[in-house]
Length: 249
Ligand SMILES: C[S@@+](CC[C@H](N)C(=O)[O-])C[C@H]1O[C@@H](n2cnc3c(N)ncnc32)[C@H](O)[C@@H]1O
Image (cartoon, rainbow, N blue to C red; front, side, top):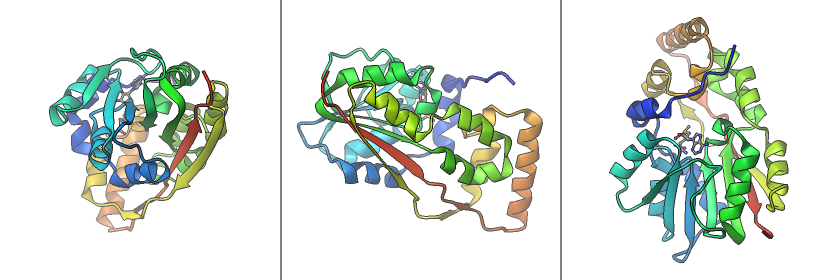
């Protein structure tokens, strides 16, 4: 089946109804590197700015967001008028070299047409000694998702779509981001409630747009039955944080 691309301008209208910022995600980011009041931070693929705003509130840094979807950025700008948002692609960041102390992206790397082109650009805009953090899911974490249980066709699709951790670290190393390390966090297990069913019912996860309609309907029916039976579903696949420090231009 050819890969269906996701129209984030349309998704922007419902994104905040089905997805919110994850304070725990930003907490682990800041645990590793805390920017100070002189720091400039860029959130690449910031979407509707949920994590941009969380990070800005938790630090004194000057925070910027960048996204290729104007629809997503308009939502972001409405809720965070004091943050500067840039409409651009990750592989063409319209700022001078060495502008940022930290660049991060959460749940974006699997959407990039070329991770290497974006990596080159993110490295270019980082200062020497600056940090890059890519928050994503490893192939093992994709297998462990609760959605993988109900929509098994998403596993192979997402393993193809998501670069695994060694591939990300390799791309970093090839782009002057020579010191790399990764951490994985299993967030506190959340017993899934109506919100999760609502998100799935509205295809609020991008991989649900990639499977056939019959595969989607079959999984949705099984999930609804699981709710009727009051089965306990934990959402705890976790995330991987792939870090790099820029060593040179
Ligand atoms: C799943 S959303 C994640 C949004 C946000 N980072 C979050 O965690 O809520 C993916 C975002 O990446 C953006 N995106 C996809 N490809 C991009 C690219 N090449 N350059 C910049 N943004 C991109 C989409 O427009 C969308 O807003």
